[in-house]
Image (cartoon, rainbow, N blue to C red; front, side, top):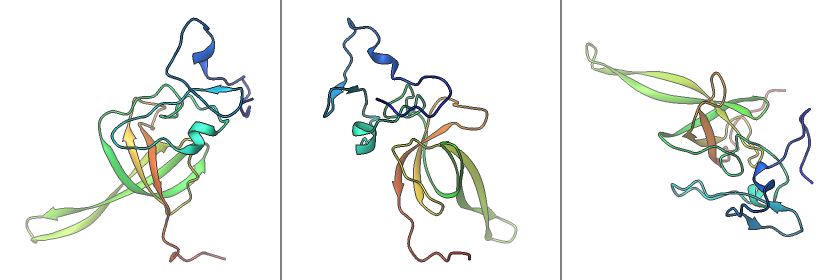
Length: 153
């Protein structure tokens, strides 16, 4: 049975009609789980294939397609439920002084339960349809942070 952590009952809606046969793949056990390949060279995580979570905004198990831009950034906040804030740093050229200045943008992205994301990790996100007021991107890949960062006590 799927993890029920929301107030309403969560299920993958693809198995309601027995006549409709989707591209579902059988997982170990009797429960069927639907998942897909998002393409663009991104592998489907093992947690998405064999996990029990239900997330309709997940690009691997939900009804979201990845199209448009693919961006990379560093996680600065993971305090929201299934949403992270990533920081993208870049250089802006000032012609008058013939120099560059540092600038950054913060970006909200949906993080599927298939990933374990912590502050400092480098993530790759893909553009999708608007998922909420500020979220338009979905996490596709997580690279763990270097262990050099200092921890406050």
